[in-house]
Length: 188
Image (cartoon, rainbow, N blue to C red; front, top):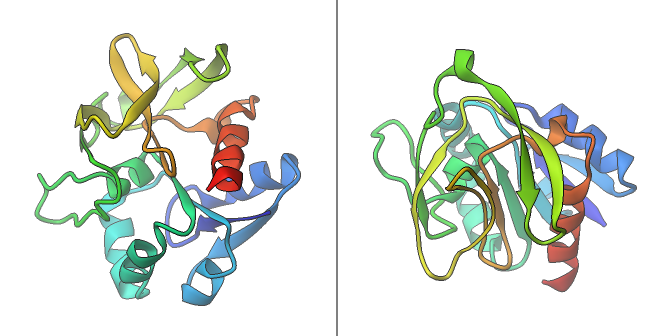
């Protein structure tokens, strides 16, 4: 299985290493040709406004939207923002792939970053995760399922094909999230 990592900006190299660690083939996605080689795509954490602009600069926005029904996408932190239908910022244009909205930096700025243990509902396991300038989910449609919460706030959403995470699974020793994503790719 080939899992792409959008490599335009952000924390793409650690996702690449994690994909290798769980035995799949990672691909850095920098252009359309790279994207068409992928069975799934991870949009990493980083700065969502910069990523949005880089998608346009590299002519990837329309291609990702066009391919969204053929491959599964996992959006991590800034990637979650990009998957959402959030339109509260004039500098940011999301991909609007999943029907939910977020508040960028909803858990605070960089200095407010924190680690937490969450219950991953599908496996019923507690996993350690890291929140860095994490987006906070404001609303999600009935088509979306919540797979994990922090206190009462949804932090992991799926529509059955795609995943959106407020936190960074790449800093966890657990592979639960990556394995779940791999299974979504196989089913779809």
